[in-house]
Structure formats: C-alpha cells, structure tokens
Length: 105
Image 1 (cartoon, helix red, strand yellow):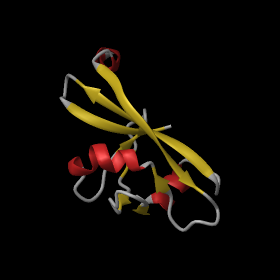
Image 2: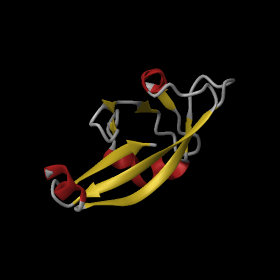
Image 3: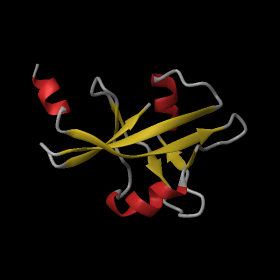
Image 4: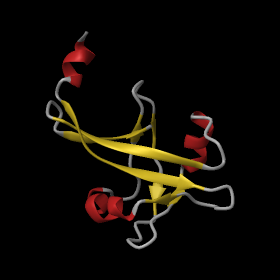
C-alpha cells in the first residue's frame, strides 16, 4: 500500500522519443532531451520501469544529433524490443524524494 501513497506525489514533467531503425547502429534521442536535461546527466542516466528494474544507457550529449552510445542492447533484450522501434521516455518528479525519474514506455 505504501507505493500508492508514493505515486500520489509523482507527476509527469516531460516525455521524449528514442528512435532506432534496423539500419542504425545507435538509437537517436530527441534533441530537446539534451537541451533541457543534458546538464543533469553526467555520463549515464538511469531508466526505471514500474517494477523498479533499471538500466543505465550512455548518451553522447551532442545537441544536434544525440545518440544512445551504450546500454541500448540491454534495454532491447530486456524489453524484447523490435529492431525498428520508437520508445518514449517519461520524466517524472517525486515531491517525496525530490528526484526526477526517467521511465521507458
């Protein structure tokens, strides 16, 4: 029951797509992500799902063409993603922990 109480204090603050085509080596991230959140991410960022499973992809932080340069294969295998996919990362904020979370959907 505690998780229900925690969820009351969580709000979605943003979302952005990650797209991967079968012809690409690395998935592309919406440049808005680097523009708005790049300063908060030092090297990797933690992506959580609703069961608390996390992955730590690494992005190149190039503002005009940001890419996931490491960690995508783990996400792809865990979620059984197709070779061509557009995933949405939802950024949430918890007023309880005062932390942002990055959730893949």
